[in-house]
Image (cartoon, rainbow, N blue to C red; front, top):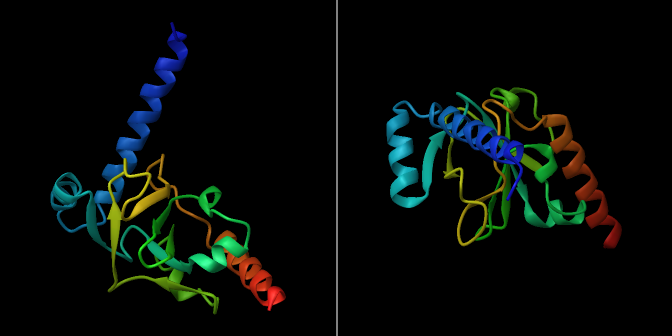
Length: 156
């Protein structure tokens, strides 16, 4: 029988994850619409620039950097387009200057998988958010893309 503390830990973690999902849904003008989209199709279309921006990275750059960008924070993978999307603070677009990845902000929309979609098929979380408001640090994403580009050019 598992120790009671591990069950309590799992419940606390699940509660934080649900709070993070609720926080994500608040990016939508009508959060209940986002929740309905997740329930109906597993993906909600959310506007960027309000709660978060997203840095789009080519999979080949991420893989050349040493693999999964998961330790950065919440990251979505789209295997069909071979792209990763790191969720970063709003207005990151104002200072983002990497030529190897594009920052998407206000005026753009992003397909965001339901919090429990952690594997293919389709869009899924490489690393799902586990705390409301916890986002990737843009500097860490920049370091990852710089490293990946350097590795790709070194192979050429």
